[in-house]
Length: 380
Image (cartoon, rainbow, N blue to C red; front, side, top):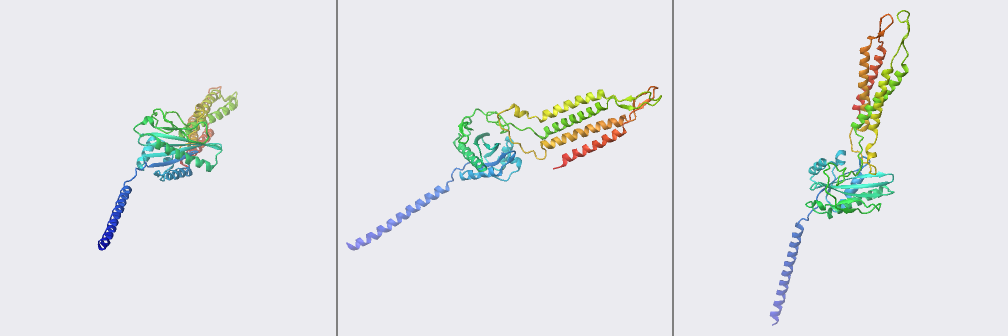
């Protein structure tokens, strides 16, 4: 029996080893199958700029990107132009999303108020075309605390997106409302009413403005500069004519001019006073911040980049342009009147206009205004 016993034990060991190998191979194959099945990735998010006093903050954008990467979110932050970084228009957002194959776009604004800040981030989903908003307040804030608030707001925004309903149920899409009690803290998630068909993110989903847009554009500068310049120059001219009214135009000269011929500028001065009043009032209306007065309680929206055509350039172009046109009209009129009959003396001899010196001065001033206009248009 001993030989049979010795033969049986090694055979059992070989079978055990083969069974162990089969189990090991099965586990390796199963692990490889699980690894080969890709996990469902989150939609790609394109991070735009965070506006701060009209400029895109590169540090705030970097903080948002780093925080989202730590959360495992696929993000993209390519080099964009200043206009693209501050993009909030629906058409612009859709164009950028298609250009970078992104499903979502993230941007935001930082509103300073002395040493306190309001951080507002938004996430625009190209699928349902509806922004998701979150706010974070930082009181008595340093730069480091401000960046922490930006990072915290980005995390809450992504958490709100993850907790939201699918796009097929737009009525359950959440919006983020700030906590009115805490100065810094988590935002409340509430269901919004149906969104208004707004073309820009300057509106809340329910259509109410969330900040006061600043309307000091190049076009507004044109009107302000042109009206103010016409009003001020008209006022100066009216005062000068009033001072010269009644002065001697030609002194008495025997039989030719028995009495002095006097200037009569009363009616012209009154007309210029009316024109100057209209110009000054129009310029003041163009300068006045009507939007801030009519929408109290809302923070001012950061200025969108305008390139070269800013409000101040509009002021210069409007002022120099209006003065150039006015100078050309007045100088040409004086040139046409020079030598024409001004009136008649006692014996019926015509008295001519003597405007050669004034005409030369007028054309000289017009040339100077034209040079100013060219410089205001051409200087970068």
